[in-house]
Length: 350
Ligand SMILES: Cc1cc2nc3c(=O)[nH]c(=O)nc-3n(C[C@H](O)[C@H](O)[C@H](O)COP(=O)(O)OP(=O)(O)OC[C@H]3O[C@@H](n4cnc5c(N)ncnc54)[C@H](O)[C@@H]3O)c2cc1C
Image (cartoon, rainbow, N blue to C red):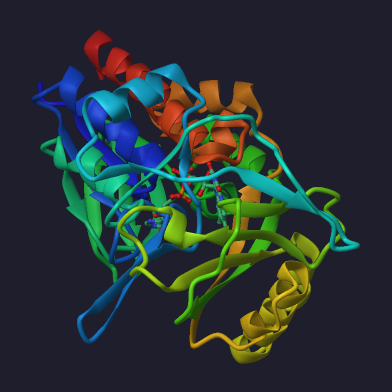
């Protein structure tokens, strides 16, 4: 019998799990439902074109860190087309404006020349899975199998199993009133996972800045700005002689100003950036972009027992909040591991 799997969300975790399941069970029918137009979720990139000039920038996850052997060897060994190493170290700054050398050792950090979303494009592209984009799932329930419906009234299933990848609060919204006790309990456990909010400004300048670092991170966590990254340190992202800064506000600032007019927020973050760098030209970018991430970074992991109990009823979850680490490599690692678990359970019989 053909195993049928429904995957909700096309983030890096789901992409890794789909890759593993598809390879372990080539006959499985896997359908992925993603609410956005693109894949890779919070590991997000945009392309900006002006005339003959093109920019690529990442406004969610900044890179994939070389911090997990299984993830790193898969990426370097198999999904290395357009893979590039981020050049330069990460330095720190404090609330009083002191910039200091060094943090994070000499770990390698990767992205792709055409944007970090290439990671999920590579993984899904190596499978026979169908990816339904712009399909937001609204409801999950069970009768002869697992069924789901989208916000437009589209109905899908029955599936032998479901794999959910949205951030915990959005997964929790889907796992209520399924009438399968262990699955509703997983929904409750997911609802308990707290998140930090991050508001990102992308600031473009038609001049080059000179800096000995790729990025600055706020070490004492007291500043309104949490992170300033230089996209020009990523090969292929920024034309020579120009600068693109990705400025991520602190969780407190981001929560307080989440719904403020974007132009005000961009101006404030540009002003802070100019002060931290001691370069007033940075207060006035030539162009800017922005993105608010309500559920940016999970602060904790979901209760493990709830995850295992729901799996026995055919409902699996994957992502950084399942891994217990708000990092892209952790989401991929968890996707690979969850993929193994789903494939094993199908091999034992759906
Ligand atoms: C601002 C910011 C900066 C970060 N910086 C770093 C960094 O420097 N380094 C690092 O390692 N990590 C960083 N991270 C964390 C990293 O982005 C995440 O850990 C990782 O991308 C999580 O992947 P995931 O698979 O768990 O889920 P996600 O990427 O959240 O994917 C979930 C997917 O589910 C989809 N979805 C949600 N609801 C539905 C629905 N109802 N129906 C269908 N689809 C749905 C979403 O659109 C999304 O595509 C950062 C994150 C943010 C936001």
